Image (cartoon, rainbow, N blue to C red; front, side, top):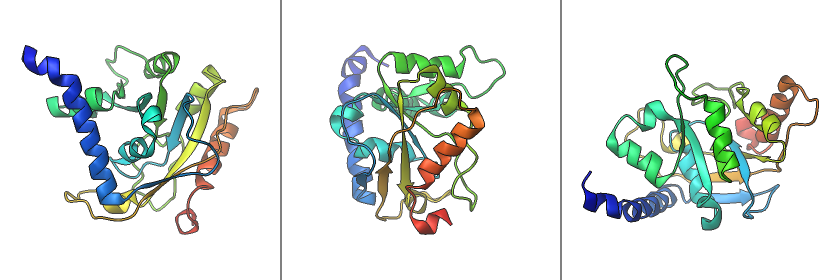
Length: 219
C-alpha cells in the first residue's frame, strides 16, 4: 500500500464503518433493546447467539458511538486475513481481536490474546457457540471460553445479547440480503460465581441468553 493511502487509511476506515452501519440499518431497520442493562460507557463482554456472518455488525451498529468506539469483536484470523479487503475491514474498520482457531502451528494462545484486549480496556463481542448455528436448536452448546474469561477477569460483566431475524436477512448461500426488521436485545449481566463449575456457569449463561429470545425461537 502506498504511503499516501497509508496516511488516509484511518479516514477511509471511519468512512467504511459509517457506510456499513448505515447499510445495516437500511436493510434491517435494526433496533437495540436494553432490557436488563443500560447503554453506559462501561467495559463489558457482550456474548450473543450466532446465526449469520453479520451478527457482530448488527451488535456494533446498535451500540451508541461512545460504546462502539471501545468495543471489539473477537473473530477468527483464518477468515479475516484471507484477503486485503477482509484484513482492512477486520483490522482497520472493526479493530477486531483476531485469534488463530487452528491449534496446530499457532504462535499465540487465543485466551491470552483475548485477555490482553480486556486488560487494554476494550469491551468485546463474542459468540460462545463457536460457530454459526445452522441447526433447528435455538443454541448450540457453549464453548468454555467465556467461563475462562469470567474466572480470569471476575470484575468483567458478561452481557447476553439476543439477535433476532438476521439469519433470515442473510440465509446461508444468499448473496443479496432480504430486507427484514431485526432486533438486538441486551439482557442483565452475569459473572462466574466463586466456586461455580464450568458446566453450571455455561448452563446459566445459556439460560440468560435464551430468556431474551422470542417464544417462537425458544421452542
